[in-house]
Length: 508
Ligand code: XMP
Image (cartoon, rainbow, N blue to C red; front, side):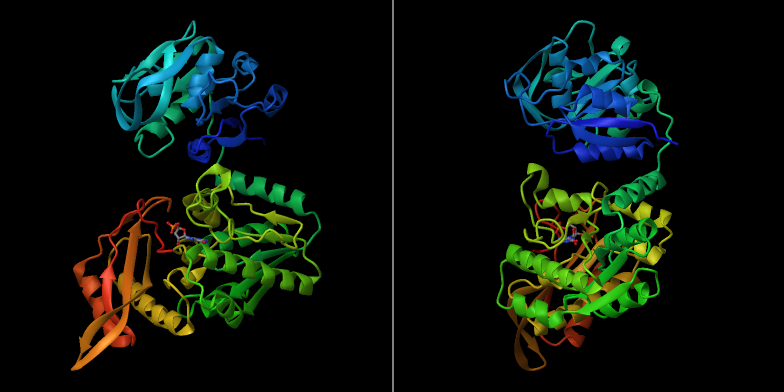
């Protein structure tokens, strides 16, 4: 049975995937399409609703992105968000101009709870505003249903034509009741039935992957982390017999991790191959200190190993990866700024010897990947694993990388993780970092001059922002005492209390 669907038309806003995700969260399948998608294509998709995203342009400029104005005559409910509401109003005859006072950040909103958009919500709301233009004159037949101090038309509607819009962003966490507003649009206006869940995504992706790869062989880089494991389980179901999972032990894994991954996957029907490539990676990384350079080297070397394995298998044509949406955003795809090149996106070399990339998780957020993992029948110890970056400990040894430094870090990190696991502290990711700094200490009667280890523990749901975890002093003291006593080469321990932003979770 076909799911009901919502089409999200993209006008270049940074939150389009978040909008699509909120719609999925409300139990409705959504698909992102370019803003100028042909009207006949939209009719063919037969959506129950259309959402117009935000975007950086001014709608009254000649080169601003537009949609076909017939969109607003189809009788299909439309919700415009930020640029999307301006485009809606402009296309229907309203007037848009620069704001006298631009609004950025969390803002108080007064909502008309008679509007279906705000049904069941309080009159006073907090919303995220981020705009330099706004609607000054409403099109005929529209009315304002929410306002802020500086924006009279913060939400508008023309229920007779099923056209709605919000100047603010309901899709972000900074609009606490935003998902309820989106849900109202879906259920009260579009007549959603809530017929979508993660198992529909599974079925859809299985079909897509089969179409993409045909009878060809596929190589998957399996690190044992959540994303690549879920990807492996999905592909094993989609293309049994055509999948070969390569686990590259690059010598940058945590303590005993290589053997643990092999143990967890060798008996599954994944054609599991372990490649021990420590020497190869460490020699390529010798003397390299610049974080982006490290990532690129590792990304390239991974692919070279996969290519060699592909030749052994008999020319596998496709490379599969467990890339998820936050990897794509932070690597600077979609015109966002590059924060760091996640090895599986920005770290890929240009000349890869594969016909295509298979990335079935590319539109999902971490928590959705975990749900998919459960729906595919993976065990909790795999699905709930903390993320571990593809470049591994290379980006946790600050500065140049040596085997000696990696071993020090492995031991210190293992102790911290053991102590965290023994305690009741709730953190979503925790690890140790070997700072490239040495510091003077005293042990017994001797002067020491050894490394400073930093401990990092964070709380987050989406890994795109985080707060530091409030680890108890007792846990920090025990960890410190053990590392100093058990790990030669470390003389001092510090705890990192920076959030993201301004820091990132990893140090490099
Ligand atoms: P940052 O450091 O960007 O990390 O705040 C966000 C989350 O992503 C993980 N991470 C990576 N994962 N390849 C990955 O697969 C990478 O290159 C990479 N860099 C960071 C990090 O551990 C955290 O969970």
